Image (cartoon, rainbow, N blue to C red):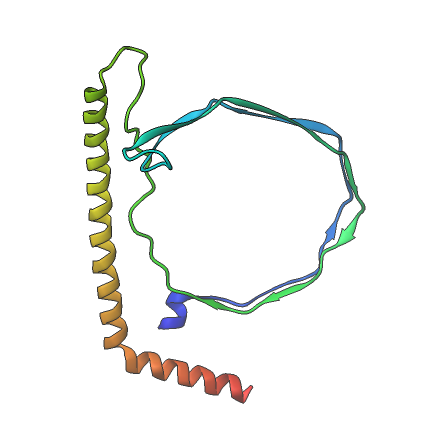
Length: 162
């Protein structure tokens, strides 16, 4: 049934003891190697151009902390019903890798155009998959509308009775 398939049960969590803690002072370091991305249009550009960020180093100090022992608050969470679907996968495509050799601009443009075409083709295929899945879901909901309406009505009456 709908509830078994799409709902998580209600949960109650009792109060719990938590010990005290001490965190000593420290530091953190972040290092960025810099990067370049192809920008479509800039304020003074009519063609794509490379936008690069410089390498960087960030040094930060973390303060020490003390937390005394405590009890957590009890909590209650009602059941949660949701339908979700994920399509495709995350991917990162390297459009062009600078190898330090004197590659010509035309060669670079051809390589970037080819890689971009492949990435856009994969994106279009994923969009078609999404459209098909949404259409199938809408058709299923429409076909089971009476069952879904009956389920919602029954649950509403059940909640009002309690």
